Image (cartoon, rainbow, N blue to C red; front, side, top):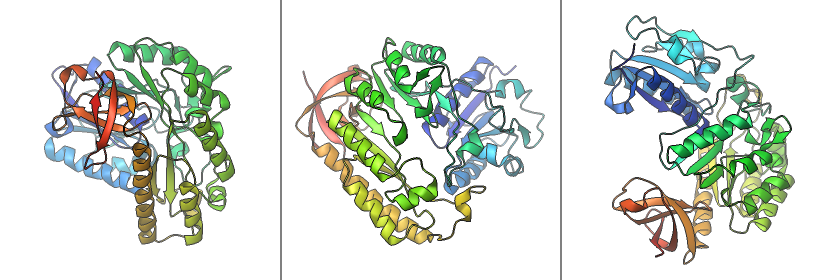
Length: 431
């Protein structure tokens, strides 16, 4: 029915969204669609949205206008977290033909009757109860794949809309995950990033996340795994031991912090305090000396005074953290935090965000500096970037070597030589 038709995607937000967009794209391919780049025009546009920040919502509106400008007669579908939270508002936006909530996100091929007889803003599958679980993984980027193992969240953090957008925590079964990992390997992809909303809550009968990592280790063809993000209270000694001894799980943890103030962590309803976070990071570094540790931080949460922000700044400075992902607090409807007193002015949020980003640059440079002159292993990517191939070492240092087609998607030994003007490390292949 759709042979000869084209589709195009734009994905906002997290690695989980990328894995799901890729899965929807493959579903459309099975019914005849050929995938185009967004800017090249398409008969069908799918915009997979995020709800974490206000900017993500504004970006969704911008992309709708852009799609209709490129292809005025295109059929536009909006899905993802923003679509789940605001289906009616999105359905009334000019240019939107269909809104898919969490329950029908992967049912697009069955809902598309044709692309001509449009009924503006039809809404499907926005009931948040009894959500199904659909396996997903990405294949678009040839170097790595994002593999979903879990969805939804049971944590009631006061600032977060994810439980409202994705529902309760639910998991894939180990058999499906291993099958998907094998399919990824068959597509000549060497690295898998394990993703989900709260992957540390993975459950399959009596199996937990540490058990899954041991089974993934045996998938032939996959040379590297990275754990995308895991809550500090869910990092067990067994998970640390797995990463320490594994030949495939990289020495790289991304551990959300959000605040270095116990007072703010309490208001956020996070499930740990700074002493647990510190002890976990110190233990990881003592067990895995070459590890890279990243952290998420939110600045400007209601009630965050200058003193409490300084607590966060000093807490991070005292820890062996390698980089930060910094977010300015963004008010979200239907969250408890949006009712809190002590609103931090947006200008102040921006100033604090800038300070933490500067700190992140310093932390990353210090992490890189430690390994100058050493020999490391790097998986090279596929693009020719101004005469260079770029890759990441096991412990997440971004490196570049002179371009050579025979080294694309190869894991090689390199020597780290010096910084370039962009803060990447100029390197050479060890012969």
